[in-house]
Each structure stands twice: as structure tokens, then as C-alpha cells.
Length: 120
Image 1 (tube, one colour):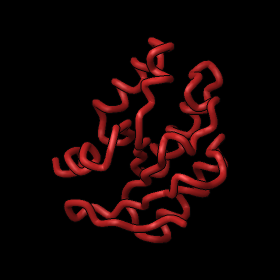
Image 2: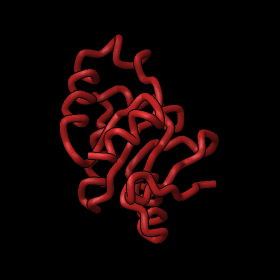
Image 3: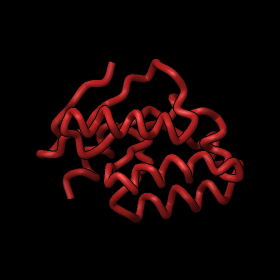
């Protein structure tokens, strides 16, 4: 069950670690709708909730999901260690680095890093 948290006056919807895999655009739309309904500005999803195809950029799953969040002006945070995925893919490392430069999609290691990002 998702929970709402206020972090530095920013409302975030925290997704649980357990649950259906997030594997495509419809899953993103469902998350965005739920978050919007609850008044959240960001959706925080544990990295383990994403289908493996999300981390293989050639599948375009990550791009499709991120684009939905951009279109609906909802922030997306991928929370947790994804080093097993980035170690084997320079394009994924580049994608993560580019996302983290922006204000829409972030890949963060833990709650502390999330809090720091939301502070600014």
C-alpha cells in the first residue's frame, strides 16, 4: 500500500517494495493517477519494483515510463541500489547521470539522498 510523506514541505507518494512489477506506460499512468489524486508531487518507487526491462535501455521501457511522468509533470524517484545494472551498461549510467541533473526524474540510493535532493 502506498503512503504519503512530507519531506521538506514536498508531498511524496512512497510505493512499497512489494507489489506488481512496473513494466510499462500503463503502470506509469496508474501511479501518476494515484499520486495526483492524493496530492503528491513525486512518486518514489523502490528499484526492485521495476521490471528488468526498465534497466535495459534498448527496450525503451525506461524512456516510455519517464516520458509519461514528464508529460504529467509528476516527479519520479527510483530508490535503491542499481549498481548491478549500471556496472554492465555505460548507456544506463549516462541515462541515470542525465536524469539526476534534472528536476523531474532522479535515481537515489536511499531516503537520506532523497531528502537532500528535495531540500534544494
